[in-house]
Image (tube, rainbow, N blue to C red; front, side, top):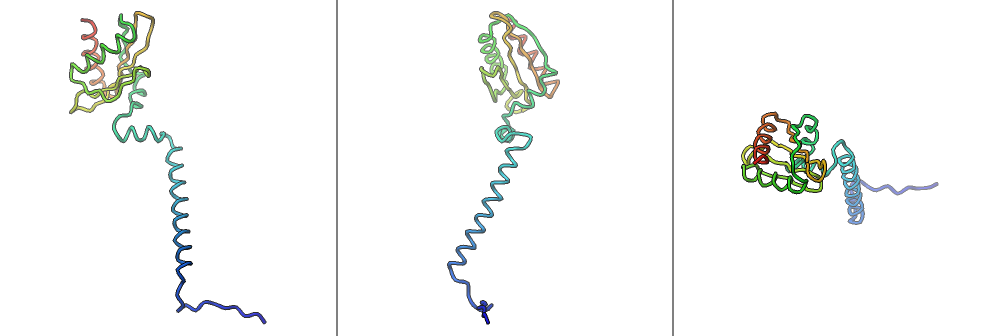
Length: 155
């Protein structure tokens, strides 16, 4: 006959077993964290865009509003148009929160206190003409920035 030695419920678990149990718990936590992270970055919004949104510097909303933008072509080359626009926005008190001359965008808030976003997009038509698109989810903000900007560029 075979006899099995069973552990008595009064016996203590040795320290080696405790270490193995805690390592197993850590491993399970790591697996849960890894899967959560993968689900987070594979969602509708990328992790980068999610962070930008959280920080309040995302331009995705402005790019979506671009289909209803106020558009005007001005008689400036791309670089001059971009720099003049930047200077006018600063002069008029708009808060510039994102700019990228290579991506052809300047993103602003109406002011430091009014954080309604407005995006100014640039498209080079030819060496002497640039198209400006002003987009925002707010019609008022879009029209206000357009009026400020276009009057400043006409001077």
